[in-house]
Image 1 (cartoon, rainbow, N blue to C red):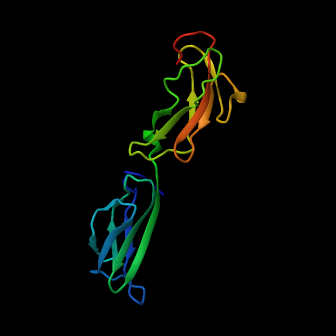
Image 2: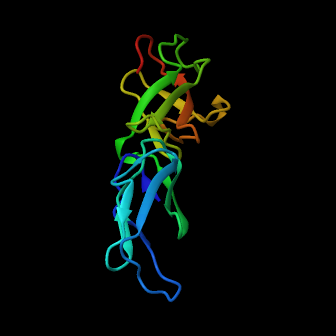
Image 3: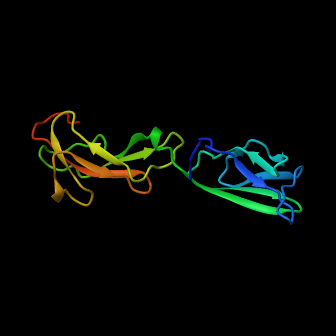
Length: 178
């Protein structure tokens, strides 16, 4: 497991050994990213006296499965894979729908408030909990699907696309509500 856009904490290494299990120095190993993007520090690395060739692998900025292939013509191939997670440390929230609506006081707006949470690279951030609060005018929120679960303030989780939504019941005072 890795995080998009961040270097792996340790190097990737392969070991060339003889039929007797002894290290084989001087073997050229090629490294190629074959899925998901990212980079390696060297595309070809020669094994040292210990028979090991090491490279650094930096995942791409796209979340999901990433694969690196190490191969030597006569010795075969080794496939490395990682699941690159979104960068939750760089979460950004943006409105998607429901902003700038008008409605009657003490009633629910017809369109739910929807927000998207993504990392700095645009990957959706599922499983986060957003806290909806009112900064002016009061009101209440309700879970998606209807206003029957009204409560003064609410948290709601993001789905697999990083989207969350709530219904907004306007406060009892006319005017701008936030």
